[in-house]
Amino acid sequence: MSDEAWKGTRMSDVKLEQKQSLSRKEAAVWLHALSKAFERGGEAELPMPGGAIVEFRLPEQVKAEFEVEVDGDEVEIEVEFKWSTSNGSADAETSTHED
Image (cartoon, rainbow, N blue to C red; front, side, top):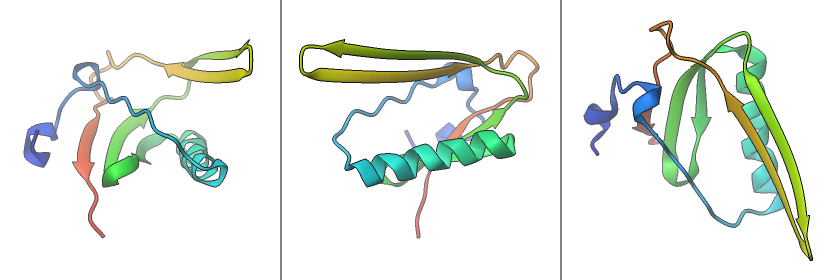
């Protein structure tokens, strides 16, 4: 999908899922970016692998789900945040970031 096609796409119309191996430091950089977005609130940008940037609006309150699962020698940690975009002003866009 082209950059222009993504412009103005509602968050409910988009699902972006990435699975890849990261170093501990790379994971920390991404988590820090997410943390800063939540700290600032409002309009937020979250860099994704491959140079894409997901833009969205963060409300004052979100629903959070935390899960830690240990299965044999594998540990899985999931953090999920949800909020409503029904107020009409919480749009999401995806664009390609070029340096």
